[in-house]
Length: 297
Length: 232
Image (cartoon, rainbow over all chains, first blue to last red; front, top):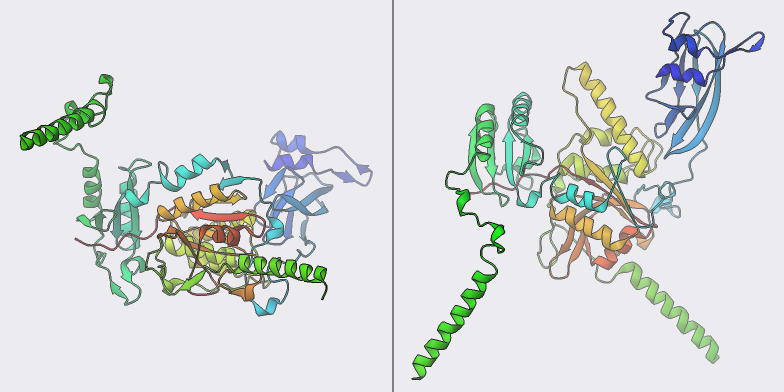
């Protein structure tokens, strides 16, 4: 990776520019010395060498260099825009400290007038390019569709929490980590079960108005409640292995379930709809008419 | 006074009144708790004891984006972005926009993991979230309502206070949405990080409040909120 930087580094000596030395590094010949460039730059910017490579952190370590002088073009980007550019030249083996600063940002739009009178806000409207329509992005910056977003918010990838069972596990940090690892082995992605792992002093387990416990387990040893969405506790289990067994049991076949009793759509109707319903309605009306007729006579 | 002068004054007065009422939205009001005046509960019942007041970053610019994210994720969804994220942001320049938010979360997680490696603690990962930018009212408000119905607490842009906070001025702020389409009047509830209490308003007013800065921006963290209170 770093060898590619040498595309951007031109070497020149006393006689002026010479050929780029990247071939040597790409051939695995490691001789010479490395240089270090320490760059001080604003935290909300990204540091790039040219347009090719983003640098994580504040230090650039060059590949192994032959003696001579080299030059990098450094760029700062913010919100995808280049906001500062600087050339840095250095001798092979030299450590260089540089500072890259940018023009002060225009003040954040909010509260421009009478700023002292209002509480702080802080949305930098000048840096937002609102789309014509709707744009949705994930953590990674990947753009997704509205349908995908709806699924992520409510169904499929993230369960519909309002309708899912909740498993609330209370214990100390190591017990929680152990339980989490063991559960990961039995749960499938998208499982309709909302997991919550809490230390005994978590705010979620107390009534914050009175500071009294809400009734969750005290957490020693690690204990889990299986709750309906309404909060009703249907089962509890103590110990990581027992909790895993309880969750596994949720996934076992219901012994009363008989696949043969499920209606087959190949017959053209879904049970409880269509002809059965029509027949019921017609039969009911006929009975009422018959009763009325009998009473009249 | 001439007839034309009267007409001009009438036009100005009408325009003023229209502008005034559209800004203040006569139906907006504030309650102390997470329920409307009719006692219809919000989807989110946030613990006030863990509410944080907005502050500035190291350059004095506000941290409303990160304070709202702290409420949504650090408290409500109990994720890696705990109180330490907000502490970290207080050492950084203030002000927020979508790309900066993403960059700061990544940088914070990298920094946390560097420290955790030193202590032989397991690494943490970024909490899953999506960012929505929109100028389409229906699409945006439907997504927000869906998020709240599923127990998520969005952080959302906020341009003015229809109940008269911020001296009625237009601002560029981020707060938390705690209720969507609640009760017979289908009200929306906002929890500000500068003022305690929930500000309630109808959907049209809510959209104006959210989007008046040119569009709407929301961050939705996808991990679940707290478990329901246990009972038999």
